[in-house]
Figure 1 (cartoon, rainbow, N blue to C red):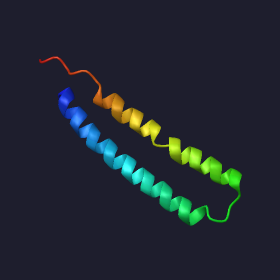
Figure 2 (cartoon, one colour; figure 1 turned 135 degrees about the vertical axis):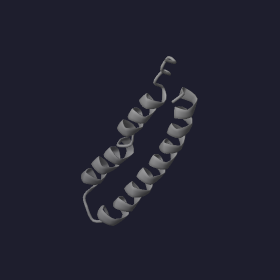
Figure 3 (spheres, rainbow, N blue to C red; figure 1 turned 90 degrees about the horizontal axis):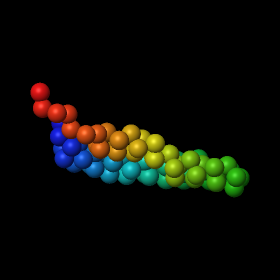
Figure 4 (cartoon, one colour; figure 1 turned 90 degrees about the vertical axis):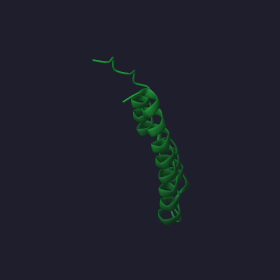
Length: 71
């Protein structure tokens, strides 16, 4: 697969992933974090805010992999 194709696919995957991640984190925060203390809520928001980075790094690494030489 050429790098241009991987970048196109990766862009759409990242957009979909970040959208679902943010909606999931928002729904979880509204349902589970309404009656807890501030420290636990702060920890959740840090983890939810940075939790998408590791999967995104894997997708971006895949997107930027060099093309294989033709056989």
